Amino acid sequence: MPDLFAELESRGFVQQTTPELRAHLAGGRRTVYCGFDPTAPSLQLGNLMPVMLLRHFQLGGHRPIVLMGGGTGLIGDPSGKPSERPLLSKEQIRDNLHRQRDQMGRLLDFDTKETRPLVLDNAEWLVQQRLVDFLRDVGKHFTVNVMLQKESVQGRLDAGISYTEFSYMLLQAYDFLHLFRKEQCTIQVGGSDQWGNITAGIELIRRVEGGEAHGLVAPLVTTASGAKFGKSEAGAIWLDPQLTSPYKFYQYWINVDDRVVESYLKLFSLKPLDELRELLGRAQQDPARREAQRALAAELAERIHGEAARSAIVASEILFGDFDPRRADARVFDTLAVEIPTTPTPGNGLTLVDAVVRAGLAKSKSEARRSIEQGGIYVNQERAQDVERRIEPGDWLADRNVLLRKGKKDYALLRLSS
Image (cartoon, rainbow, N blue to C red; front, side):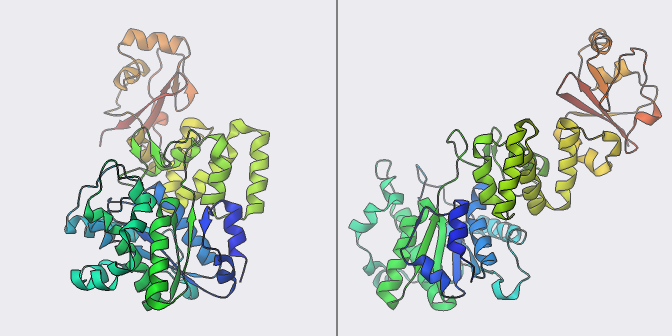
């Protein structure tokens, strides 16, 4: 087996592990799991790190289990949360679970038989549990004193924690025990805020089965300023294209700070480390080109969004690079129409002055004329200084689009009315 542990260390995935994990991995093919609670309608960027962990276990020859929390999601994990989560309905949890499960299909390899992931729902064994039996068989192995020392509980003692969320640790520990028994799963991975929950499961397996189990947690990913990773000014960055467009997803990575792009590449790119070092070396020679960010953005956008990512990349290069919009197809302009102000127009006999006003780049015709005369107006990225210019048939790209720009970054799109 390849030295997976060394690879994970080199990429920055290892913050804390059980002592014998490296030897355990070297001993043969293992089964590893990570849990995902469907408390949101989509996975978000914060979920990418544990998914990438599972992907690297796959590449190292091990079998991953994606555990969807149809049961634990009804309770809510207190880890990293300053206050009690609102309880979601069973129907909402079920709908979220199905959507997130579909997204996993693009992130892991489901084609290689030996390492094909299992996707399970812990509602299948948690919901049917009887309370008294669970307290006798599982609860007796945990002391309140030990549970109070766990980070997920400590962080909530001042604000208060309900018995419901306090019990979450026992449910996750039971998940590990169940997977150990049924799937011979011996490793659980997650973010660093999961260490207490993971060690609770390891201890339960030891007490109940006399078995050996292991855990690994990765550092929580942050931005260069220390803020929570995966957030933008508009909120969370989702993997669902209906919640965060492929264009905005791509732009998030393009705008990654130079100070963290190396760590992000190691965590989220599947390129070999030697190739990443070469890329970073080139990027450092000309930081303005943002070559490292572009490579990361393209790889992740295409992995998550497939064909739609290519239109998003071209749209971005039209607005912020040097891609000629005349080479773009209709799908690219459909992408632009969502991302920049877009105005329908009949198009017949339209002067450039009228076009600029109609597009909202000037408040009046006199302002539009001044902008044109001063060289501040561009038609399809070409400067237009003739105030008598008209929008000609050849200006309509992909049959129905004219891209207008005022100054360096104020864009608008005119589209022929259908």
